Amino acid sequence: MAESVARVLHPTAIFSAMHLDHDQCHAALAARDARFDGVFFTGVKTTGVYCRPMCPSRTPRSRNCRFFASSASAEAAGFRPCLRCRPERAPGQSPVDQPQRVAAWAVQQIRSGSLRAGMSLDSLASASGLSPRHFRRLVSDTLGVAPMQLVQTTRLLIAKHLLTDTSLHITDIALASGFGSVRRLQGTLKSRYALTPTQLRARSTPPPSTGGFAFTLEYREPLDWARLLAFLDVRAIPGVEIVQGLTYARTWRISPRAKPGWFRASASPGTGRLRVECAEILAPHAAALIGSIRRLFDLDARPDVISSVLGADPMLEPSVRANPGLRVPGCVDGFELACRAVLGQQVSVAAARTLAGRVAGTFGEPIHTPIAGLTHLTPSPRTLATAGASTLAKLGLTGARAECLARLAARADAGTLPLLATPEPEAAIATLRDNPGIGDWTAQYIAMRALRWPDAFPAGDLVLRRMLARAGALSPKAALLHAERWRPWRAYAAMHAWNLLTLDSERARSASEGLTNTQTPPRRAHSPRARTRSTSRKAHA
Image (cartoon, rainbow, N blue to C red; front, side, top):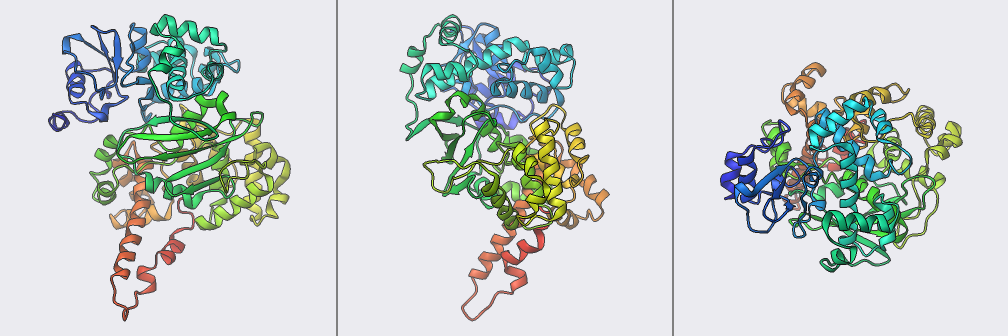
């Protein structure tokens, strides 16, 4: 059944025009098509619950279904979340056009606690660069619900996720989800879901944890977890983050005034689930941490949609076919990523990692963790701004890099540097380029990973230029023209182009291992190390 639906439905058919086609949605629901998980939700009139497309419950009849673009709109219509498929775990959307970016940004701000910090909806609209009226209209048109209803439902689903997925105390959950008090959380759960926190917890078994709390995050398959970790591993800042086998771990602090902690994550291929374990001290910031981890591992990506666009290009098709679950790694700290990009200018990936380790070891706050190798927090913008360029240069940075880093730190400390996902990524990229020492390549790289802009494109990257030259795009203008066919997923195209370099190295390694003992592989043709040196300068920091 799923195969027949896949032939009829285009991956973007349901969400493309911001309206839901009833027959197409029901066909995807009947097939339990996981491609549409989080793309729409099904309200069942006979039960009063709403479900994800891959819910294991019996498929309801078409006439008994209503379809919604968001969980918030389903709840606004009077439906409550299914206790089997758990809509609060559904992956989100990769925001591409402006309405989707505005809606995704609003949800991110709610999760991070911006409204609890004194920001009203009007000030939230102003921060997005839109008028309050336009902001409300875009959120309503995209998600089918008013911003205030979005706030209420987002907080409630965060609380439900933490109640059923962790062993955290209910007081910590009330604070983390933005309710402010246990009484308000209990009252809202009772009125909206007719359940108490105790009743919710009786239906679940939280993941086991040692020395903290744990939870599960879900994503759309496939996810190339091994290559994602390989990318992060060679760029991991010593003392701050570490990759051990198929597990990623790092230190984390939501703000300079908050208490620091750590987390580690591991995925089981084929399950669609990521297990995360965190320090107990991070409990008040659990909601923000969940959002950060989703962005770090690009868990809201839609591999089917991305592959359908990029796989049509003969140049990228080998990588798309071999690795359809390739993601764009994000970050949990935009300033840290910006520093890492600056340190990676004109040097190899390994050299940039060494410099980043020196900066973290010198200026990062020491922290005790149960994970060997995690010893420091990433330095704050104020710390590096206070240190100044002359002190940074003593760590081995060139004068220009040290000056650039000090200026970035000063601007980040003043709050004038765009280093988070934003509704206006093009404007943010232009602001980044206004900083001396930040060229287009660095700004685009920051946009890929920190701003989470799927159409960011570091056109000056050496690997990209060589790959495009193979396809006949010899001039910069021709290269940009060729890349137009990759929109709006040019950041993923860059990842596939870099992956093709890895695949070439793997093929060369396999060929050299197949030679007899009397044969010696040519160094320049088959040495991955030599090849890395030749392409590492100004190539994906």
